[in-house]
Amino acid sequence: IAMGSWWAYYELGWGGDWFWDPVENASLMPWLAGTALLHSAIVVEKRDTLKLWTILMAIAAFSTSLLGTFVVRSGLLTSVHAFASDPERGAIMLGLFFFLTGGALVLFALRGGAMRPTGTFKVVSRESALILNNVMLCVILVVVVGGTFAPMFAQLLDGAAMSVGTPYYTITTTPLMLLLALFMIVGTVLPWKRGTMEAVVDKLKWAGLATVVLSLLWSYSQGQTNILSVVGLMMGLWIIFGTLVDIASRVKLMKVPLAETARRARGLPGAAWGGAFAHAGVGVVILGMVGTSLWVGEEIEVMSPGDVVEIAGYELRYDFIEQKNVANYQTEMAHFTLLRNGKVLGKLDPEKRYYPVADQGTVEAAIIPRWFSDVYVALGEERAGTGPDARVVRVWYHPLVMWIWGGSLLMTLGGLVSLSDRRYRIGAPMPKAKPLRPKANKEEASAI
Image 1 (cartoon, rainbow, N blue to C red):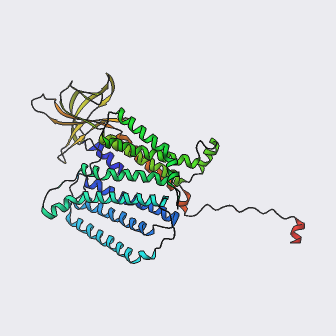
Image 2: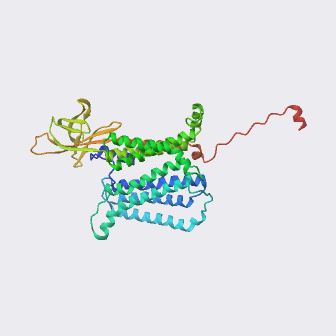
Image 3: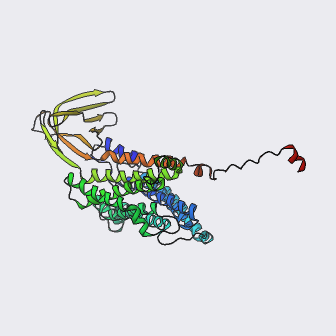
């Protein structure tokens, strides 16, 4: 998913990385179900409960993978990512989906009663938090599936054209993500089987305070008064700070000598570190989403050489344009200079390419990536009557967009670190060395 959004950002030239496209949603659906499956499996391993839920999530994860393949390959839904438009192939995929999913659900109904849980837990416990997390993930999954297929059903029922876009997903998923972030961190600090809310509040009070203060300060410094912006910042920072608090609690940071803290850190299992990296990565991704969706700046101007457009405190100067023939395509390349307070920060060379063999044109955007913001330039059409080198130029300012892929890499690192845990690689606990018996001397041996 991260690689796909990176490709969309760099190659499509429309200035974004996620558009809630049907095929993008098709990749997200099995990820949501698979994440719920992973956390259910943890409960089964630790407490021998949620067995039925785990099997159901396994069926949902595989079924949504098949459903996504059907969307991509059938041509049923229009998408820039679709690979084919073959109704016959789509019918085969749909039949396979119904056969495998229906068969799995029938077996689940017939044999599910044999899987009886043996573990018990209280309402305030890590098990309960994981169940709530799974419920939120499943509700988000239903929202995404509904939004993806609603246009198709609307057309089938009454022939009406219907579009489901970003506003629908923003309104429906934001409160669910807020609850998901809350339960995610509460669950990490709760003990298995039983816990108390007083202990949770005591552990997370400083994380909550830091989240609120830093979110308000960050929003104020950016001049952002949008409530969604503040909520999004709070979600991301809450997950990051809560994860840090959990790790600090495990290694007893500031409670024991540093040498003992380091020993405890080395002794933590790979799954603990992997989970921390993955959760922190989710927080970083949320911050990136907030920046690039709610703080984005955009300017569309007709520019001639020498013109300057300002965006978010930057100045973009249009220098010149040239035509080139390169190997198998022809290109129109414009040259821009990015400045801030008169200081040159870099050069941008967006292109419009034409491939004669395929009779196809593409837009090659130019991007200056920075840790906290990107400046993104795409070259548009020639504008008649404004000079031979005048072009429509689209300029975007994307704060924190790189954090989306940085957080994705951190989540990937979490998965790899978790796989290094010997318990998951071998499936058996580390054998303990047996104490050596002292050798008997000759007198004792003869007496024996």
